[in-house]
Image 1 (cartoon, one colour):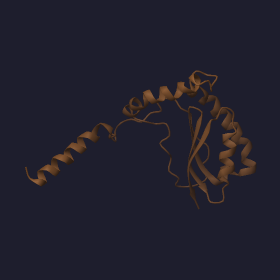
Image 2 (cartoon, one colour):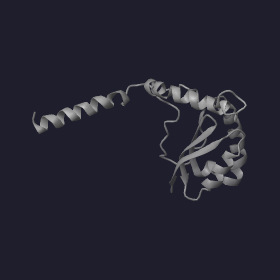
Image 3 (cartoon, one colour):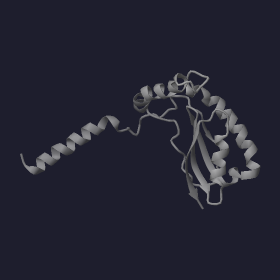
Length: 160
């Protein structure tokens, strides 16, 4: 076998090994876990919307065991009053919305951001764009003070 043929076979093997993990463009993305996903502001133009909790059927199946384990470990460990940490998310979404309404006067976050929130297992994922003069640390801290929120994960980017 020539060296070129061997490289070709290795490349084909790599493509075939990766094939089950590739997502087809026509696969429908859905919020299969019914995780709260909220766009809360839209002041910055051209800020790309995040994928949020939307995933393909294959991604959902790949994640299922891990999601069940993460959801129940909080209760098993005695850190949650509900049997599954995902059960908190709808209630947290309502609380976060109330908190955001009270924060706007002091932080002007609606005027300085384009933000989306995804809530999963007591975590608030913060995605989007913020202006350079926005007090992001104070905003993230205020979100983290919401009842039952375990952690706020900031995935925003600064835009002029």
